[in-house]
Length: 97
Figure 1: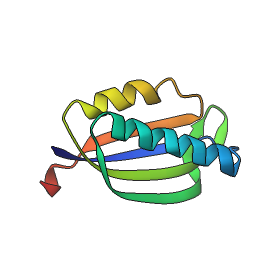
Figure 2 (figure 1 turned 120 degrees about the vertical axis):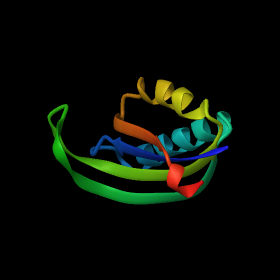
Figure 3 (figure 1 turned 90 degrees about the vertical axis):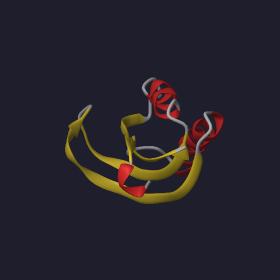
Figure 4 (figure 1 turned 180 degrees about the vertical axis):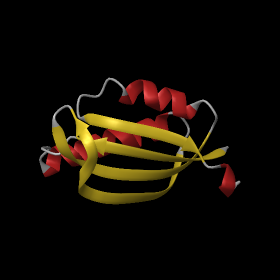
């Protein structure tokens, strides 16, 4: 098991229920591929550093995960096709192991 940090930016115009539904899908993906969430850090709606799809804001959430080496690739493949996910990044945290 490796330690990962995953950052996700969701569409800023999501209603509260839709935002919660997207976050639930992400949690389900992490669990499905063997990940265990250590901590979730919700930053909320923030200004983007640069425009993405002509949007200037997004909902930021960071997940700290223990998981197998195959998990990041599987999650990224599923996040890539999600309409409300503007950006995502999964990095391995070698400094925590």
